[in-house]
Length: 351
Image (cartoon, helix red, strand yellow):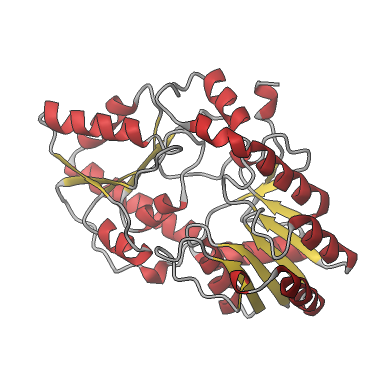
């Protein structure tokens, strides 16, 4: 099997899938961009930023004539341009898969309305800042729906979609982690702040208040500007990860944290989205402090057992080889036990 893997590196996903495909025996050409080189050292066979658009056109034609399958990580992670790329792929009757990774296809104006509809307080969020990119996100989603044979996404990345899509687990290369023995430790939380979409302002305020105004035994670290490997190493100094409040699923950094033995505090899905089982400590903007206190007050034994359960679950389900095997099954057979086929049912809440 020959696959052209193309995309923009997003949180290490392109690297994880590239390595997984190779380990599963796929002949692979990886073409991509890496705007976050400071954090991820992903290597490409074709660095798309090194070629003019005319050269990319000729190179792309050669690549898709060679490939049996073309798989995109990030719906906006095009080789030349989505209109051109997708049409040329289907003209040659090649299989096309698209893996949406977040804001590439998320329509934030709809997301905000849904959060308000279900009672999530977003008054302190900065989600409004993302609305300016809604037209681009929707256009990438519609192009994928028009041309792709399979789409991997999540419900909050697929508002206004008309086709079914597949939901599964995010990939992570477990061998990048140091071994960790789970034992009783002083409770210590870590958060990687985002100015807009994670709810960082609320996390920071409430964690500071908890530490300053209460007697709860808890330390708190803010992690900024670390390389990916340095971040993974930093996780070993903590046992709680504060992820994000405003989405119905955790992010990839949360997967890395859970695989490292941290309990991930992330947004409650309010039973709206048909995700596979998740081992998070669910919170929302209304119950955040109380839920963190409940976690801190767990006995040492219960806290340690929860960490072990989370770590084992994450390692079993997010292992990059397991995830990549499921992706290959989708691309070849159109189905996989690792993925749930769903349709958009959230947009109707506000339409």
